[in-house]
Structures are given as structure tokens and as C-alpha cells.
Image (cartoon, rainbow, N blue to C red; front, side, top):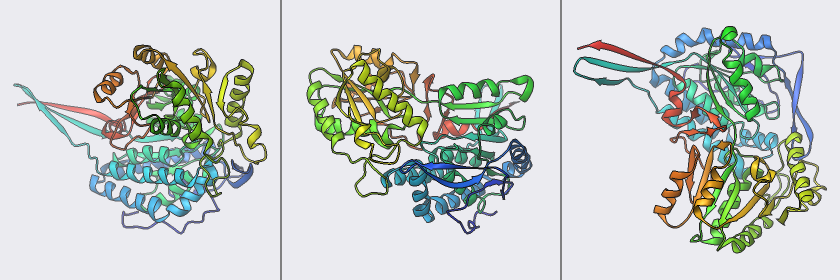
Length: 487
């Protein structure tokens, strides 16, 4: 399709995989669950490994022409798609996101704006030739599209995490196959359906289904790159599969696998304001954010007041169905995560953690039908406790005092993860000093996790491999070729 084309008429209650520009049905179906009600959502065709083969074949057939398409045309197509998907169809897509992911209206608006912004930024990035020379040679560095990308996307941000990968792939001349989470397939299926009005057949495809689809993509010899966001355990399996050179050839891999992000709060902060923002950073989307604040270290001089203010903030939030007025926190997205976080609450009670608020997190929400848990703050749990050492990915936030800034930095770094961190202080020089010592891919000063399309996003240690976003992330969707010639 040309960039001036428009998306086909969209049904928001019928869903299908898209292969080679066309809907693809299946003998088997699956469905998501509305996390606010535990009711089954729409049945949708479950892709098969044979469908994966067809999608890869279509992508490989489409790749030469798309790679040869001028950047200006690829850019126009991406911008037109973004306008149609995230502006013209924002009310419907946002409502669908709220239903499948359990997101509040403010949460869906943030995700849609993020997806639009990512597309518009990527559309303006052109990786031009870079020329360097010495007394003998001229060397020209070129960025060449890889081929076919497989995007494996989690359930917590199904739109924006798909779009980061789609926008990076198509602007550099690649084709992409999206595999959404079976917990939240619907928005990805609709986005790719809309995309058919703006990209040639085979350039953007989607195959949703069961546990066999991810391995089929990872193990396929026609896939050149895998971009994955999700758990560390799955990411490591993908890395192993992508590196099985004897079977499928060596693939490029980008992995973003979560974190145990620490916030360090210094004594000079505005306590009520900082407590509110740190709480927002810990509990946004009910804590189901890879970059959420997972641990808080507060200077002992202000520790009691800080905890008190954080409790006030959290206890003022309404928990409930995201369609209800005034709801701040929705449910956990799925039963698996609900059970995991519930077990952490129960362990805290068993181990004697001090709940500053939320000890009744399960019982207070038992009358609601969905996967709801009231948010909890844990006051000074042991440093070696599970809540401090593991990523909770839910509405339970530990806060501990520190006696020296050096000890806080050491504790913040004492983790296998290295995704994000934050430092809170009125002293700009001190903030930079602390930020330089934190072992994390992104450090936020007086702010919680708030990525921008222009900024490279990557994890250190077991939080990731490679990175996304920014011009650096876009480069990961290319091979690099350097042409040498004598003067």
C-alpha cells in the first residue's frame, strides 16, 4: 500500500492473524481474560508453526523491495500509520487496551502517546553514510537492513513495546513479524491490521497463538533478528536458541529482561512531593512495569516522615475496575502474576515484614471479581528478604533507611539486574555524582522511569542484551558495512 492509503474498515470485536497482508484463520482458537472481571474475551485464531513458515516466506519475499524503498517513502508510511492507529483510532484502541491489559484511562493515554511519539521520532531518523579518512584511505560506513525481524512482546505494554520494534524495523528497511503475548493479543492484532493500509504485503505481520509460536520464530532459519521483551528465564532460552548455529544460523538478538530498580532519596528533598512521585514510580500500572521503582533507600534523617507521606499517598488511591470513575490502580493482568504477587504478600506476613500499609491487600479486594490487590508498603524489611532481592512486578514496595550515601549506592548495585535507577536530591552536583556510580542502563534524576524515543534504552547485567530506542537502538536493526578505498 502507498503511504496515502487508508486502513480498512476496522471491527473491534473480531480478531485475526495477518500473514502476507491477509487475515489468516485457524482450526484452533484462544482468548484472553479481562483482568477486571475474569471473564473470557474474544476468541481469536491460534497460529501454527505452518503459519510461521508462511509469514517468514512472505517477509523474505517482501524484503528486497522494501529495503530498496527510499527512506522518505518509508518515513511517510510510518507517520501515516501512526496517525491512523494512535490518533484517528485512539478511542477504540485505547478502550481495547484498557480491557485486555487492565489499564486505567490515564495509563492507556500514556501508552498511545508513547507509541505515536516513537513512530514519529523513528520516522525522522535516517542512518546516512558516515565518511572518515586518513592520509591513505577514505572509509564509508553504511547501515544495511538485516532482513526479517521477529518481535516477541510481553503483556504489560502490548502497544508501545510492539511499536518500538515495528518502527525500528520498518524505518531501516526490514520486515517484521510480531508475536504478541497470549494474555494480551488484541491490540497487537488490530495495530497490524491497521498497518496493512500503509505498508506493502509481508512487511508487517502478526502471528498470535500458544507456546509453540515463539520457539518456531526463534528457531526459524529465515529470521535474521529477534527482539524480545519479557522474563529473564525466557530471554535466556531465546539467546540459546538464536545461537544454535548448526541448526538455524547465528541471529542478532536484543533482550530486555526486567530489573530490580532502586531509588535513592537524599535528606534535602521536598518530602511530600518526593514521596508522591516515588510512589507513582513504584505503583504505576499496579507495579507491572520493567522500569518501576522496586526498592527505595531513604536517608535515615527523613525516613519516618518519608514513609508516613508515602503511606498517605497510597492510601488515597482507589483500586478497582478501570472503567469506574476515579480508579487509580487496576488489577494484576493475569492469574499467574496475581498468584505470584499474592504469594509474596503471604510470605511477608509469615516472615514478619512490617506492613506500613496494605497488609489487608488481598482481603480488602476480595469482593472484586478481578485480579485485584491493594497496594502495600513494607517498612524496613531485611536486605536479604525476597521483596528486596527479587523483582516483585506488582503493588508491593519496600522502603529502607540508609546511614551513608556510599552504603545506599552499594546496596542499589548489589543485584543481578541493572535496568534503571533513580536519585532524588535538590543538589545537581550530588545527583550527577550518585548517577555516575549506579550500575544501570538508565538513571533518572528526581524522576521515575520515563523513557523518551530519543534516548537509548538498555539493561546492564541480567537486565538485557543490546538495546532499543534512540538512534542507537535503531542501528541494532542493521548490519554495518564499511567500504574502504584508497585516495
